[in-house]
Image (cartoon, rainbow, N blue to C red; front, side, top):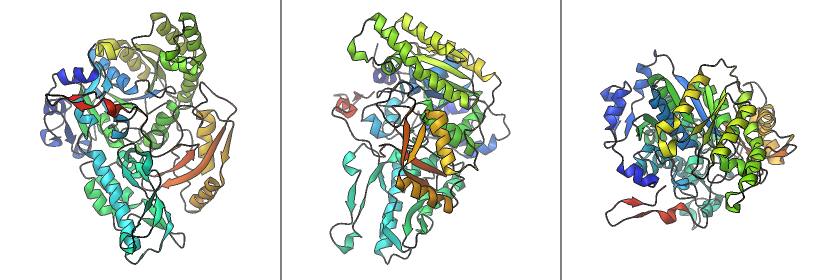
Length: 558
């Protein structure tokens, strides 16, 4: 089989105007960026407001291995499968960050015959959204430091500047830096650091804002620092939010692309799920709900991460709710959670035993979905090395564990026809009655919200708060921020905060070492364990493979 990049480069794409008009968009609502990608005017949401909403499907996953289990590939495959059975789907995906593209995971277009295209464009710069987000973030940082230098009218305490700069690459050397060196003309010396752009609060704001004015309001509410008197200093106080909004006025518009089989995809915003809310933008979801009859929206990492945040943050903010959840699994991940790695080359019996043991992780994720009262369909994302016996076992065990249905997703090798069965199962699940509800109420205390997620989602026995976290919870409660939802930050590689605890761990403690207030985005971020907001490159990053050939074509991108 050809590589995913070769398949994408050889594909025949429809002009993007044709994709948009097929959705019912007016010509003036489609703003092309070349022939095969476009921005969509926000006015389309208002024009279509009276249309009934489509069915909403969230694609989540079991606890993944470091390489990921193919949620994007499955999301694209499901969209293509919906097309195969005569439905009108709209796919909503996050924009790729250059960090993972050149790091361990590679691109975020899907793979094989289940891709969105143009693959190179969307993985490399796309329509410039993430660069605009980084620029807006760093403008606020620059204006804050300039304010301190020029008389410090807001009495900013340089030791309580919470705002960091951002860059869209994995660069561990920037996690902690010294600023303002070289004399008074260069600013006030202090320690700071960089976040990767996908983990920044500006990214979070773009991903949850409902329209341009809401974006402006949320940017203005960002807390950038504290004064010597303990008062918050916001982006509005620093007179930065207006210029930030102008930088983002195009970035807030959803991007339209297509699958290899011509179904529409709204690819917009790219927040990480281990730190931020890990979903495509609320604007893309709201638009998609008016354009198709099924919206397929992907959440990052496992159901304990992106899906929980999609429901408790995005759905709460947008007044929407999923009709079904697709839980992506792989034989590889089940063996991993059963204590067997691919490289060990175990025999048939050992492989099946590891799958049976690892199913405990899948069962726990089905239990998480059940907490929200929504039916779950398990998608077995088939890999070439999977045997029929292994796949059959996963399907049987998944149904025994409480899945509404379990179906194979073979979209990587066979596109839409390989996922038609999955699409039929999802359509049936969407027609089931559900008892949708949030995990906690707005009026719950900060600790009650944290503990609801810790106990009911992660399975923790106890939550342990570090002194800094206790101080922040008390401070934020006094500031009236207790009504905000929580956006838990932890490792995606375990249901706990310890990446080495595989399967379905019990009896563990969840350490909350700090809590940050994202007053612009509108939530609190408890930091659990050693999670970092700036990843680093490994010994052999994906960037090693990317190059230009003699004919000027990109090679090695995956």
